[in-house]
Image (tube, rainbow, N blue to C red):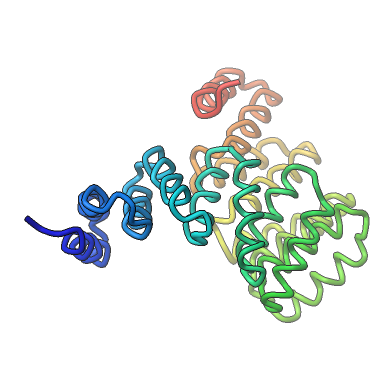
Length: 274
């Protein structure tokens, strides 16, 4: 019979040609033959994730960490999957362990900072973004996140200076234009914000956050039809985004299109009950 190594190598071969289901099955057989091998289990978890079997993926990553608590890749991948499912606090705990193990892991610092920021913990978020930039000084995503935290902590001028620097260095970066637009929007400069968000969507059409913000700017000025159009464009790229579904339902309700609004609210309820 094939050994664990044979199944492992077969799974790796399937991975190379992106046969994710077959790779997962091969790694499962390898893990069955070597149940205490964290590397075999890790590959199984990764294969399950690629094939969309996320509940099984999470269970196997937990088995990896039970065997090897310092397995950095398992900590990172499990935290991302838990965050995707809404288990942010457990994800934050795993990322905290990871940055202790690997202080120079810029991606882990950024991911942990984003969780803190979404929970309203701005100072811890700021520290994680700064740590990400200490590890990788040209890390654009961390620069963008830090600029936004500056703004949310009331340091708007510092944030705008940060973004102007980024715009000079990266004028074609859609997320930089989006960040500038957010500050303009929140300070009431709606026409300038509209220009920034429009530029962001032209550079990166699948930047859903910019379509949402464009709609919000139009809605704030009473241009409900234009707002609905922007929300619809965002849904072309993310048809299950709960923010866009709610925003479109709300603006249609405001326009008096109650039947249309009901359809979007029903979609929202199916995706995110209550």
